[in-house]
Length: 305
Image (cartoon, rainbow, N blue to C red; front, top):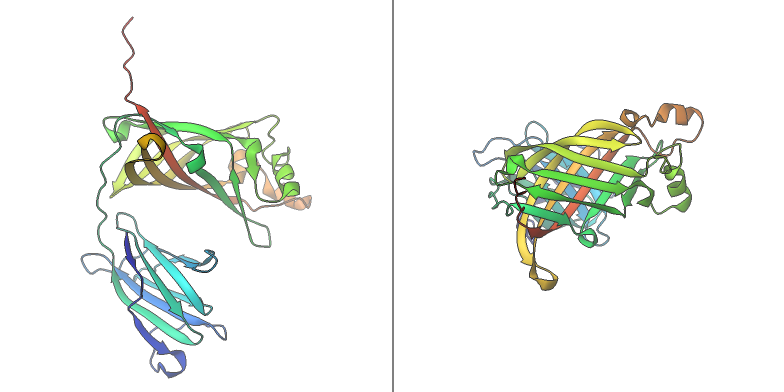
């Protein structure tokens, strides 16, 4: 990943910028960040994901994608920030920068390079390492901010085939391990109104297909069973590489995956709950998995009978 400790862009005061190219309603006291993202051929790169976090609190303060012209604009409070830029098949890049009240900070044209394809993990069985794996979700609180939560108990692994397209992944999550930092809300999410953990104690995913998308990106397609209902789900997955590390110098590999789930697909009817005054989260849930696995060894062929 390319990291720059100082953003070398064009800075100006909004009041004196004259014919500024970008117009954005800017709250009093805020600054403006602009950039134009291009690919290695110099063409606009639309859909590049940009995340800006506070260096002081590590909180995400702005997140979005470039438009069809590769342009991104954000209004920010004064402060010091870190910007992460990613796009499918491209090498991620990040910068740190500061912005002042009334300042317009332009990154100009930023070129993302094609991602270097990493060596795939060794064929065999890789099991999740729970202390270094996180399964999180983000759900919209009806009429309010987002609800962030995670599952703390799960197990699973990946069987990497000699041809990665033939690999398989399986995850089993203890539904009762859900936590959002609010005991009352967590108990309600475990109840029959939502996950109904007494009758459906596990959330299960089993892959059916690995689809290569270029660079180090894959789509893992499979079935997710929750609340007694199974639906097809696609995990947008980025392979992060394999290293020797940790206690005993274990061979490890890591990946990050995301998916969007719709509660009504699993008979969790948010409209009925809203009518009853008990809707805690909205109909769409964003699922995020940061996975680290440990190599268990090559698969042992089953001897013929």
